[in-house]
Image (tube, rainbow, N blue to C red; front, top):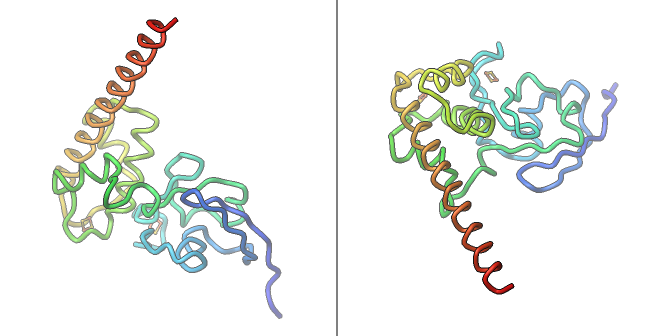
Length: 179
Ligand code: FES
Ligand code: FES
């Protein structure tokens, strides 16, 4: 007998998807098998490696610990939606600039974890970065360059924020001048 299916609607990388799924389907399988977003990796079956990390309503979660039906109505960002080749997200740029990877298997999960962390804490200390990355396992790098990559991203995002503030202040000033 075929298992009962439930309809879920999830907004993934800015696009809405509706699918009928088995209630036991994990979010990671929904992303990979139903939507073909295979940038989200599966590295274990014990919820320990973090390779499957995505942003769920802006918060980094291991997508192998969430059912697809629990994401009904939610907003999900995967590595495919974070940036693209012409507009890398600062964390992606940091990994590029600081050589934050070797085999790359863990990288999508590490990047999504770091992006979630910086959204919560834009100015982390090295210790906070290391703590924030505790849930993701990298077998290759020894983490040093990963930490440097996240520090690079934090600096870059700070700069971008300052530029935005300066631009806004300039716009305000010129608006004031016209009044
Ligand atoms: S696949 Fe390892 S924590 Fe999700
Ligand atoms: S770069 Fe190979 S597991 Fe992290």
